[in-house]
Length: 166
Image (cartoon, rainbow, N blue to C red; front, side, top):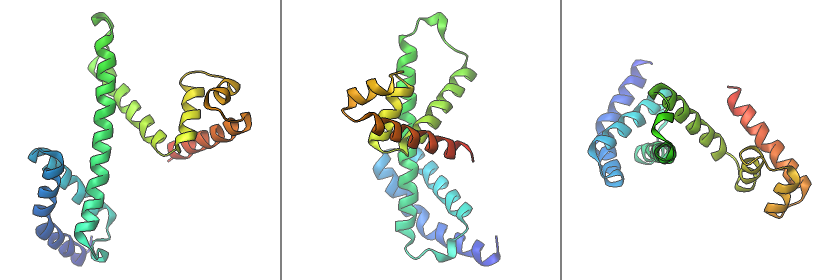
């Protein structure tokens, strides 16, 4: 990072960090989470390395922070659903903390992959891959043609392959 980029980041941080934390605290209701997300926001800005080109800093920071909040809420929803399922299992079948973490990380990754699909494509993908329905049964359940199921499933598979290829 050049000296001018470093100076621009310093100015951005010193002028907008307080505002960003207040903005986040109002939405999260928690100062500690707001401070964490504000730091994460500035780390994203640092990694983007385009600090000098920011024309509307509050809008830019707010957009990044909003995306991070959505990610956090999504992760918490997945965690809560997983913990609820664990609570239904008999005690002796609990996994180790390491296994739970791996499962949770995998669930969040799958959720992120599925989030990039359209609603119909996601529904078709889940029917076939999660519920094990045949293409014909999926078409019947969703009221679409067999060709539509094939097309959307191919789209979903391609999407997942492209995202996991990185």
